[in-house]
Image (tube, rainbow, N blue to C red; front, top):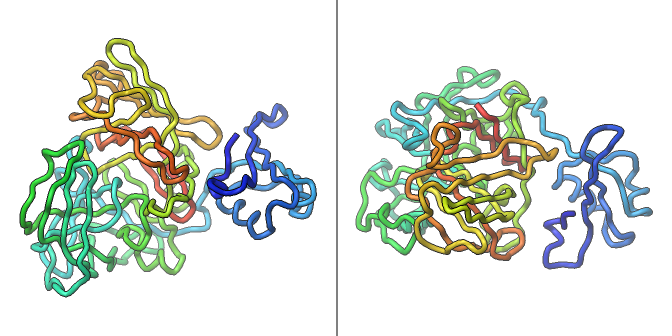
Length: 399
């Protein structure tokens, strides 16, 4: 049974009760709403938010009886055509980092690292031609390393020099204009990976393109003109050789498994969508085990990992040989696990280097401390990873 996220911290307005349909062999969700406690407008909002297909009743019947049967359906993207493909730069890989080649404001070709753990373009001042020093002062904090980047906001033009258009986008250059933080100086604060922070003036570092769950207007991969006019679906797939931008029926195979994302309710969340809900398990070499429901960040921006679980240490290194299993809350109830352990390199994806225990942080939906994992980059090489910003879906497809 699940409470609607929109009802957190307010009067209870509905629940979804899950049962198995013996006649259809499907997982069925019953939407139960006390009569007179929800408006027509709110009902339609909930229908969109949960992307369910209402069956066996009309809106009038639902408002009178207070119940209806609904079934989850996976997105198909058949109505969208056209995409861009951005190959990774030479030397990129899931053991190190994922980069793409770009020109910034018509300058020389450089590389930007793709970071699904943040949202926003963050550039050292030496990478940006014609910096407007009168831009709005701002800062950007990377919580894993403790780096605090100080600089000014500028709009920058980014040309993906190796990118190519597919379908109706064939022959069109993947170019985007996006707000960026032009960094002049870095300071450091306590963090799980403090050795990654180097304080002082900067020139051509950082060179980061954050493509995570934050606001769309800060995400360079979601602001191409065909996306703004509705021709392309705002989303992307991280593939073994590059990033496919724009989701179409041809580009999203049936082998994908999906999680329906929730909207944050906390005013300080600064996310468009909450992280995927998952079930977490960590089994230590001595047999001690921690289990919890939490959230997962599949972060391409770091190589290490950090993990927060109730009853586990709130700091320090995770013992080598610990086995970690992440089971996303898949639509339909079935899908792959992300599992890794240093002790079983041949059977499982090896655990990232520099794996740390951390404390739980406030959840963007419930507002309560929540277990979570940041997987880091290395375990992700076994999957294709999908993010649909328009619909609120996150997905994996094993290679």
